[in-house]
Image 1 (cartoon, rainbow, N blue to C red):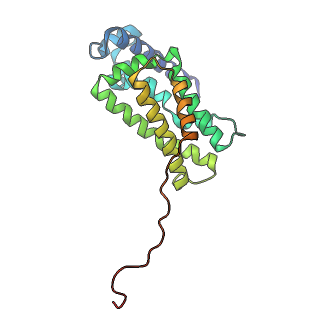
Image 2 (image 1 turned 90 degrees about the vertical axis):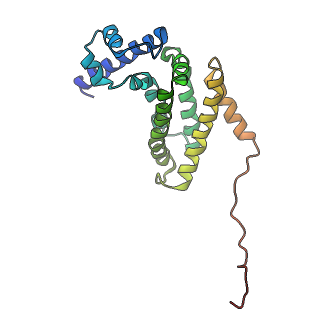
Image 3 (image 1 turned 135 degrees about the horizontal axis):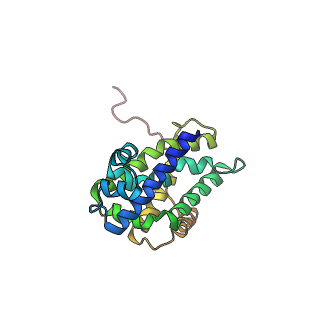
Length: 207
């Protein structure tokens, strides 16, 4: 990353941090883009260049946190696919639990706002393709392989179920919830569909 890109990334991060503080202190609907620009000591046009809408600002912390593929690629090369997948989920939980990110406060605001809540689900879905690509690399299979997509789907379903639990009580430790979910998965009598037995064709054999 060049100097210009580093400066732009730093400015973007500073704007997001100022916006988070404003949303938490004053409320999402009550905070204007002009107020955010003033607090960040930048011009309104500069703010809109980095964040064209207020929804993108409130979702910025989640765009980083929900980068599933990043966590998987950051795992040690010597990890097995299962170890890397488990570690990636727990690394994700660490980010949700990091007090500096103020994720619980932001999530309360998003859950109470229809448009940001819908956009958050879009971020979740958009990250799936990259997550499948990262998992495919670990498994030595193409991203469209059924084993990759089913494995990714199970992992994301675990995240979704943990998130639903956490959404009901933001004071719960996200990492503890993840560990509980993984332990439950390991010991649960999960039923999977099986290949149906082949039956002889029905009907009049003379036809």
